[in-house]
Length: 91
Image (tube, rainbow, N blue to C red):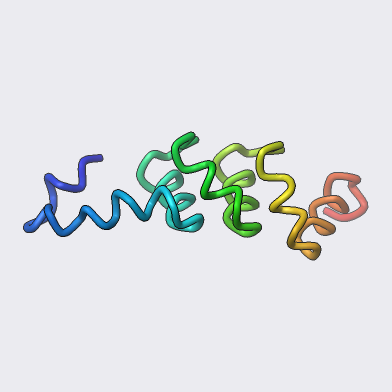
């Protein structure tokens, strides 16, 4: 999707071009809502934030994401919940 085509002042969107690659949650949302799939250009930013990495692995990759594991482990509650689910101790 080319946002510039839909905006009355496309030059004001330049900030978004840069930030979507650097802000983890924006990068995740861009992959989910705009690209609707994996976005390698944003993965470096996404993997720096535990929540963005978790949601990216869950919603975009739909499985384990080795590049994001270290970050996801930084959020112990979410990591433990996923381990329990993997081990089928809870549905």
